[in-house]
Amino acid sequence: MAAGVGHPAAAGGPTRRAGGGHPAAAGAPVPRLAYGTAVSPPPTLRALAAGGPPLHGDALAALYDVPDRGTSWLRVNFVASLDGAVDVAGYSAGLSDPADRHLFGLLRMMADAVLVGAGTLRVEDYGPVRMGEQHRRWRLARGLPAHPTLVVVSRSLDLDPRRPSFADAPVRPVVLTCTAAPADRREALAATTDVVTAGDEATDLALALRLLRERGLRHILCEGGPHLLGELTAADLVDEVCLTVAPLLAGPGAGRITAGPPSPLRRMVLDRVLTAGDTLFLRYRRARDRP
Ligand SMILES: NC(=O)c1ccc[n+]([C@@H]2O[C@H](COP(=O)([O-])OP(=O)(O)OC[C@H]3O[C@@H](n4cnc5c(N)ncnc54)[C@H](OP(=O)(O)O)[C@@H]3O)[C@@H](O)[C@H]2O)c1
Image: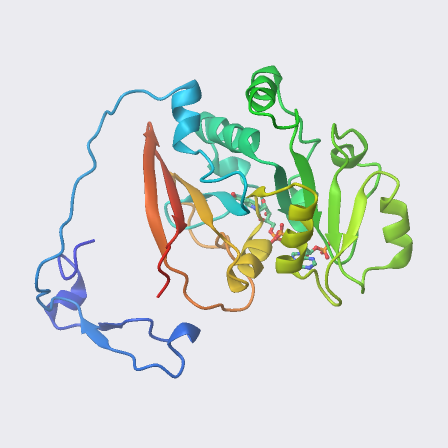
């Protein structure tokens, strides 16, 4: 929304404090910006050109290319409603549509590993991460293994080793845990997964990503959930966010795509905007020159 236009604050109402109330602002001077104050020079706003050429196959995949497969890259993919809800009645399915599911599959196709918090794995009842024939061909043509590796983050290890996501996986999954995890569950999970310890009381995510890199897993696609994203953000490990904005007002109740303790502001750069019907697909990446 253009500052001051049609907003009650334009009539001398509330002010917005840049970074106000946010931990990033702690100790720093907090400028107060009144809505309706003339900005000079006026910022340039643009309408997105509607109706670009349809994007399919390799042309669409090219828009989501990983910058450099030789270096680590953590991409996050979420869907949220217009009013910010991360789920409908506890599941993301109510927010998704065929175009979102298509992109979801495309992003998986490009990943070395699909990273997910144990909460999402349990709630969404993840199955094995297995590529269809077309995606498999795309990967093999680029020298990638036929399927990405499923990587799950868990402290409790409250995960059934026989669940299909583990027992039927085409590639042996990895469970990233910590020293405090129960020894008996660790042993049980070792039947169907590689249990990797990084950190003491919780998984040290920066260390965990380094350990994945040592296994050749560099391009990581994180599919959530909110608590895992909150921790990745706090540790400044997020390189890219792909956000599907579903054309729905979900109303109050649901959480956001992030959860957990507050973390400093992280600025991102807009890289792509795509649409399919009324659904918006945003791709943001890490700002190179961080503030
Ligand atoms: N809209 C979307 O795109 C989207 C995407 C994903 C999920 N969701 C929704 O989000 C909800 C689940 O949210 P959530 O926040 O509970 O899920 P989550 O972030 O996937 O899972 C949280 C769990 O992950 C483990 N974990 C996270 N960080 C850890 C760390 N540093 N060390 C050790 N373990 C760690 C813990 O597992 P243990 O409890 O096993 O220790 C923790 O309880 C579901 O309703 C799902 O539908 C929506």
